[in-house]
Length: 381
Ligand SMILES: Cc1ncc(COP(=O)(O)O)c(C=O)c1O
Image (cartoon, rainbow, N blue to C red; front, side, top):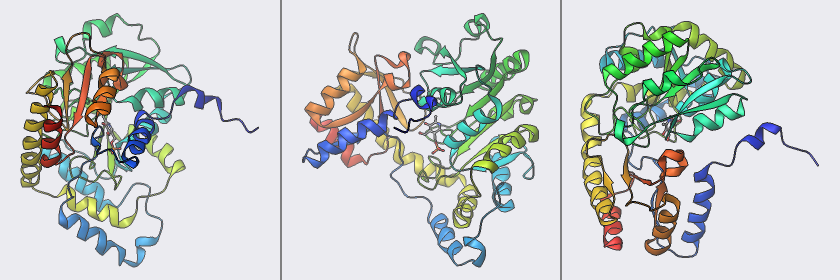
């Protein structure tokens, strides 16, 4: 018997990977399932992005290995995007590393900074990958709780009371998934000060700032942030390019170099055409975001109606690609979504996959057309 490594005992198969098998079995048996679970944008990327990818194929050097650091043109486009959108200055040569999505950055950053037993501050509720990668690299998760009563923002008084002596890294994710909570400049200032005080690397995972959000922000807007902060960003949700796998990590050159040391030993540069497409995406004007968000706004209105029909409550000021809704008192998330799946053939994500603080909540994705959402409302009513 060839045994898998011990580290595999620390993680389970990803919830969606398991649950979607069950959902697909229901579909195969003829059930008309509506999937409002996963946040995979269903709209198309800008046409010029697809054209640039296609043109990329005919470049004779397209099929060669590409630079580990990405095309200079791509790094310049990322720098231009950060300057235009966040007024953050990044040096394209040293402060930007293109990634295959921001998810891979979570592993690369963890590999670059964490030793066995180091502590990692992880939001509860939060994106499950922070905790699973922490376990895979042998570090210890130290969960910090976010609560609706504090608008899902970190409670710094509670953080200061924790034993931070072993903590080396803190994951933050604002705008926050799954709750849609928005950051203020003040929150980012507090985080930077906290990172400096305790010598903790603060990593803001920022893939949702352009979805239904009038105030996109970067943690690097804060003066002196680069010293202790990295930011992950992604084209997945901003430009409907989740399947392309393009993201980035940005920050001070010493941190970027550490991540590059890991990345360059694990994979090679992204396909040329994908990089050319990404360059075009990053040059889109704000009209792109207005068009995208006008569709998401219509969908969100319908999801709010669906949530009303299910007797849930929600925050109309929340941002992002999801509606985070509170169930009636004493109703359990997983039991509830199983019931809706069985009775109404609608798949919704239970809040508990994001941690214990997600109990009593469910998450609806906006990645479904208005027709589909109307059908979901009709089924529930
Ligand atoms: C909070 C958060 N971070 C990162 C990711 C991964 O995004 P990417 O497609 O850029 O890897 C997701 C995707 O769902 C997410 O919700």
